Image (cartoon, rainbow over all chains, first blue to last red; front, side, top):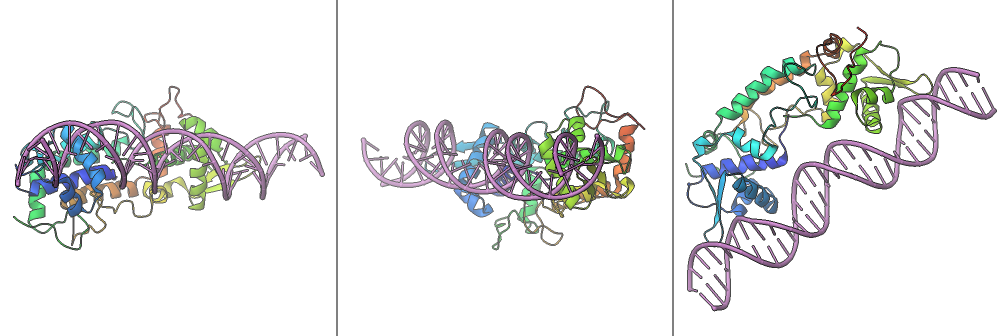
Length: 152
Length: 152
DNA sequence: GAATAAAGGGATATTATTATCCTGAAATTA
DNA sequence: TAATTTCAGGATAATAATATCCCTTTATTC
């Protein structure tokens, strides 16, 4: 029902980056501060997103991280497949190794349609959508007293 | 997206118990064996389900565990609220502490309807339903070579 | 009453996840 | 070239989840 903390940080960070002007590297430190998330841990996550091809990273003075692709072309699904593993949507609710339409656990038939809705949602939502929602000011990216959705 | 292993074991165990004649205590050892799950760990889980009011436990020779209520009156939701915590369905997908209709994370609006479907499903499915599904022979409770759904 | 079988409960061990630390490498600026 | 800034990467630490162990209590059987 819930994502790992790693995924939560990753999603928040990616959405935040999508709210920033592209091509201008964003610092891990800044993201961590805005999201109120442990910086060294976030660094590891961003590192793995770079390896996974979603981010570009730059060292040195004007360094930081940029979205490698256009925010509109990155889905939540793509992102979560990196952080949760490539087939995180396929696992059986009861933990069975083999649970398909042919040989299933007893909740399978009821769970399947919901799972498909989840998958569709994850595929449909892009970072651009989410960034826009945040920039509109109606949605928040973090539990913070002071708002973080500036420049639109 | 996925339940804790504890919950998975709990659900499997409860469904299994619901397939057994009521009033006749079932041994932790037997459940563990059938489900292919570590017995000492399962024992802790069953213990907490007893404390939670879903099971009755009996010590001594003819001891074991019984469903305290009729299988038809126990929903998956009830069970999972014990193993995952009372408001496990309310947590924000992105991990925000406060994420309600008024002040929400950017995925909230898309997630909400799905979450409600999940909640409805969990409320609607009873142990009796699931036990019946298993007893029909068309669904499995564990990753086992030899079938476990005997007596109907 | 003694032996046996089961759950109860506390302590401990193992593993995975989350988080921190430190040093090095790359880039920029002066 | 030297100083600074930032990510890279490895090692380590802290925490939480999962799993095991041991001993006690309770009930049954003999």
